[in-house]
Length: 226
Image 1 (tube, helix red, strand yellow):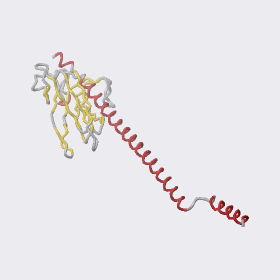
Image 2 (cartoon, one colour):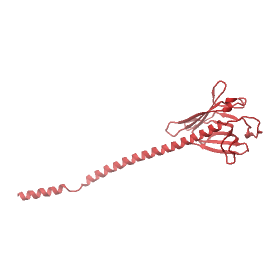
Image 3 (cartoon, one colour):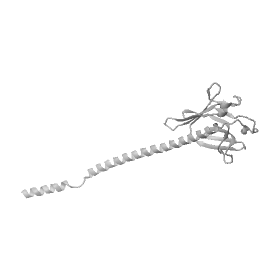
Image 4 (cartoon, one colour):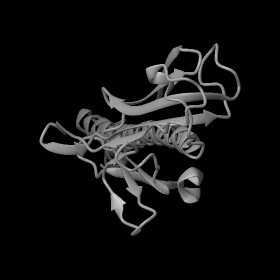
């Protein structure tokens, strides 16, 4: 009888060291699946954030690019012939006009200003333009992109897309007398005088995010001396 009990105990031990049951396997697979889902979700969030940061960096780079060209042209405002109207060179006509406008996009109103002025550029603004050339340039937003339109002294017109998408473009003009900032400027009404400085503001905004504003101001040497 004692021998039989020993054999029963041995058989019971062998039953205890058998593999996982089906229920245990299902629980293990469920835990592994949950871990993989968490890892994938974290990776996906990191990837999406990284992609958004790259897109924002590209937009900000293009905005700074547009401000650079605007500032460069404004710093070289020059009292010259109005080449857009075929005036004779040396007639000492100043072209400088800034208009205050707005546009509605969705439920938001954005500034949509334009500016036009005569300048001497120290860079090539067209394939057939010399390195330094007199021109009348106009900056505006067209379909959310900053556009530079240049009327060269040789009669050629050049259109350059400088950056975007940009939701808002705003200018303000500093008077020499009184020191007031104005929303518009017209050299014809100001006795052929430009402002002493121009404030530039670009507004970038993506859906469900706070607007990002880029602002700077540029001294106008001709205005300071006039």
